[in-house]
Image 1 (cartoon, rainbow, N blue to C red):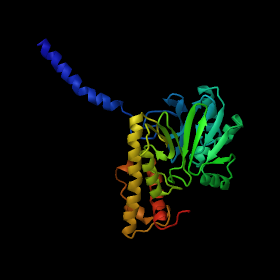
Image 2: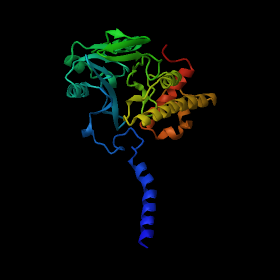
Image 3: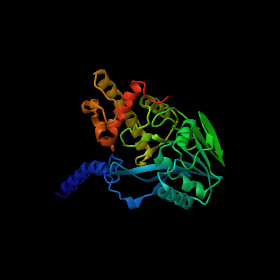
Image 4: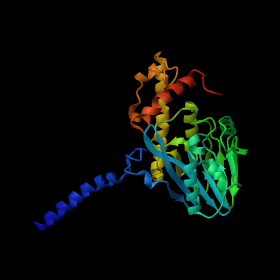
Length: 316
């Protein structure tokens, strides 16, 4: 009888283990509340490979708090930062965090996205390290100049630049337009880490306020074709390596779905003049992507943006 009880217990444990394993998986959402996290737990960072850190701080949009991410690369001759944060307070927190990670000075800041949530704190960063060189694409330089940002890049990368800082090589790449008109990515060949900035919105609905939707799809496919282990998103949690790679495919599929759905609606003769005047959206089928973080605020905007692309109304 005792042996039978032991066997029964072993079988029960075997059946329970997969459920426990599934329960340990992170909730598939970019919303910190759904992950059971509090604002006081941020900012935070994690080391991806030696001397390369993904940094997360908070941004709130449409009542949802999620992460804005930066990449911190520590070399033998200073620090490279890819993307800042959205305002002076978050910029100060980023400065303080870099100083906790290393005493080395900041040498370069790569502006991968020119949106304010990634550059609004750059004035504080510049004050902390006046000698730091700010780099962007030519398109982002124009955007930031037009917007009268307080810190403008002094160097630009139109296609590709190999940046050697100490013993570390970083490749600054323009793989094509996507989330903005001037997206850059940064790739570290040794660690096979790629920071995609807002080209990759992890578990966040494709945000298209200044996007080039079809080009975004093509740009992500170029990134996926490279030899990358760590894909780092500009928004959304930095989960484990396998999850980030798999969810980049899901992010690409979400973008493809939005483009295809807008094409279907337009072919059906439904109108969408703008985000606020888009009768077509009432007939939109977002599928599984309707549950993504920020879908309620971003989906109407995305459909309208694809219509603009289809009708040749996007900026050149």
